[in-house]
Image 1 (cartoon, rainbow over the protein chains, first blue to last red):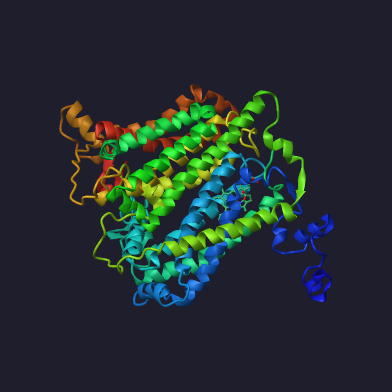
Image 2 (image 1 turned 45 degrees about the vertical axis):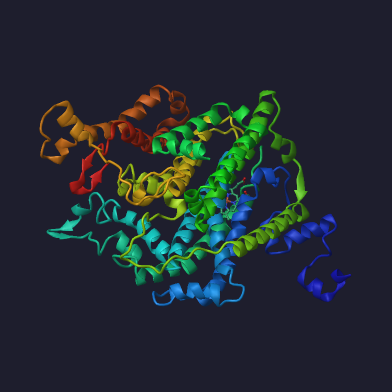
Length: 252
Length: 359
Ligand code: HEM
């Protein structure tokens, strides 16, 4: 009945998906569903085969995006406001569970990517013709970790600043371009060292010698703009490649 | 309860924890079929759960457990155990089919094509609803942690990296930051990316199996389970103030002192063995270690190519084989350094602090 109205017909260009033809059209003529093929191998979509882990990772990415946008309405990335805004999120914002959703979702996204990688490995799905998509995956893994890492700093509490300090201290020891890295002292013009605490890779990462205001802003921009865009882009390639490489893998 | 606590506390040292877990891992790989019986696998999961439930009665352990940010590690522990079973159970069943000359289980269905609407879209929808409900429930029940406002001058003790990097922080015990924080993580990424290009085994593409690719799976699982997941778990529950090692039921005493008597290889060589003074030139002083490290990366591949890994050398050719062995040696350097530390108190194989060049 509803499927006969002009409104329905203007949105979905097919009848109610109860016949094979309409079901095929449902997947084909919808921009979101047409991430999927019309038909898929039965073995490939079994839950025990994929564990739905790639899907769960994507779900969590969407969850993070939605809750993240809501958080951005309230949060200001400056040393004066950041911490208090986080408190306000809990105390003054109605239904203030966005931060919880965002945080638990982030933790689980890291775990889901690992498990997804594990299942792809154990089904040998990185073998030809899917080598390249595995590599896209590795980049997504890195982006996921970086997203989580940059987000860690934003609450601007003791946990945040010191976890990032511990993490970014490693960069200090980068060979050649970290000021405590092997070979860094070789890079000098005469007596003037080129790689110093105020010019090395860690400085570039934090925009300062310590985790401070500039680092907070930098991490915020990375976390809210640059990295999600990059992740979205690579996910688009990833999903497209899953289809182009012949759908979810299965025995030949 | 007391004996329970004392027992597990007595096992608490890096060498015992990693040693025992590696032994269990070896058991899994060598006795896959028995270990993947549902009875055994769920027995192990049950015992792990029991450990957490009983352990939570202990005040110190409960404090760690209750931290919101540690819940992911508990979830990780169980989901890794569960998915290992799910994957390797299917692998062993497939291996039995393959032995009988049948195609893997997936092949019986892979010819069949089904419509994505509803067969895939509906499960996805249900999954979305279930997950949303679960996360909302979790978010309502547990508050996201927030500590005191950031202060650049008061460092907490222990200052831990985010949980997913705890494996790297644990490596810092054995390697300097330039290795643990830069070179080795870089190698992990390079290694992951290289996998599809160095694994030329055409079998096991698109179905679960173990028998058809034991080497690839064994190596990957060792890296993933022991060198990554286990180190994360250890870093969460067993590393306390000053990164000292604590039993699960031990109070995190910030004043616990651990005697550090680690010695460099050069000192062993010049002072203990040759009974002379250490040479002044750092390159001469560290020559034994430098030769050892170079030998590890140059001579071992050659030896492996004509002995244990001869088959691979022929199948892969020189380039692929070199990359494979380099990556394996890189991964192997961590357990080797661990063993040297545990049994010989070795600090650095090559120690040139003047140039921040310590291995
Ligand atoms: C943000 C992270 C990621 C997302 C959202 C994602 C999503 C997906 C999805 C939805 C699929 C379809 C099949 C399935 O669900 O298993 C898939 C397949 C695949 N993923 Fe990912 N993935 C991510 C990261 C990774 C990583 C880290 C790797 C490996 C290092 C990887 C490698 C692959 C490969 C090779 C396939 C094809 C598998 C097959 O055909 O059986 N992906 N991914």
